[in-house]
Length: 274
Length: 357
Image 1: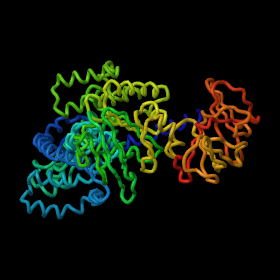
Image 2: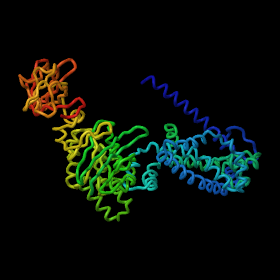
Image 3: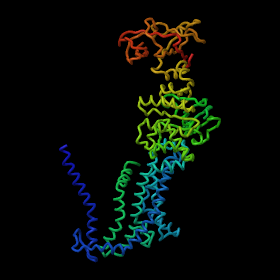
Image 4: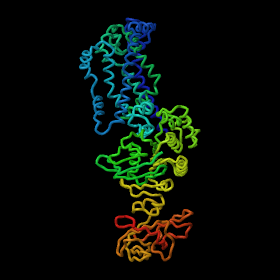
């Protein structure tokens, strides 16, 4: 027991170090955001006269209200549809197909190996052919498709763990497959659905490449995507840029604080399953 | 309520035939138990009746209706699973009422039925709980309640007591017997526990290797096992088997000899038997008595004193031991010599193919 003590301290020290390394850039951004406009703050110095108004200016300059709305619309377009489709597909692949139809599942797994960057150019031409360039659908539809391999894989892993007896009991109780799905399987899948929803929300909210390539108008992008335009426009005003970046980060941080437990569960689930 | 009829029912999993032509008739209101060792096909057969496994060929009738291609939900059966298979997210009340809800039963009727079932199973105080908050025995009750409320034609039980501890199993067994009397329903019950089979069944179906070995009442099977398998499977402790040769046949007795026997054994006469025939002699442990002139003699290798009876094992030769269950508390010493005898009517004889003579 006495030998464990120094080790605990060492572990704590390492954790503290890691935390500092993680938080330092944010802190640096925060102090920079409070520096007077147009100045070039260096490092971690607390400004003599903190300019809180930078946040208000950034909010206006980036058209933040519009961005929040746009991001929300995109999230609402992507996440519910993706989760619903993945839940149904996951159930189907776990419980309704077997033997000869296993290849369908392999198609989804193959999707997991496809690097996102590899499809972005063909995606551009396809979206253009559909006449959807520069609309939010240019982000929503591809994202739904791109999320499917992982989401289906995730939900299938959950449904595989639900005992078959429950399915059979529901069938004998008089449930059709459809009713069994909605009344028995979906309620039981709530933790998996919740985790998937959170992950998809994060990935959509932080989606950068797709909006930058497919949507020209920053007010129709996601917040992270709009950051690209913001940087181009205000790249020389470092305090304003930092304030804007922090504002763009805020919703995800708030979400994380609100759903901490689910986040951890989601990540653990991923580590155990599969 | 209805009976059940199986005609040359078969089931293949790929190229493997697991049910090899079962014929069976179950009367309305009968309690039938499928019994057999693991992998004998008893659960598969039950699942075929439920509709959870497809029937490869043959006719399966519930009531007078051919149900081969009928969905499980439309067969009029309810099943109690070994794992209970309760819906974890629903309360006991909702679990029991789920089938009724799906059937669109009006709420008031549903409520009355759920409460009636809860009363029968003495679980009214559990209705608001979730399955995770229940003990094994309570979960089993809920699973039975879920079956009862649907008022099915046939109840199916798949090893429902095997997850319970020994004491609870005895209680639930009695409760199931009472339930069968109260409901008067047709019940098909699968178990590998022959005590459950003997105590619950009107009719036992012994299965081995996907083939019905014998169908009959519990005492029928005990007293007149159709073959060596049934003889060895039904009854505890297991029946003793000895290879013997027919020594002489008279009108009122058959004398059997064997190098293992200290004296010839005498069995009641049967037809078609000639001196020199090689047979298997089966003797139930409970049929053996201490008898100084009896045919079975050897060294006592094990004594178990249970109070009401004394289990004794006697070694005849290096490879053969005989078990006897002697009534009461007997003064038998380990390592001593003992002789056992039996009444001629208690000798079971089987031919070379293992069939009863």
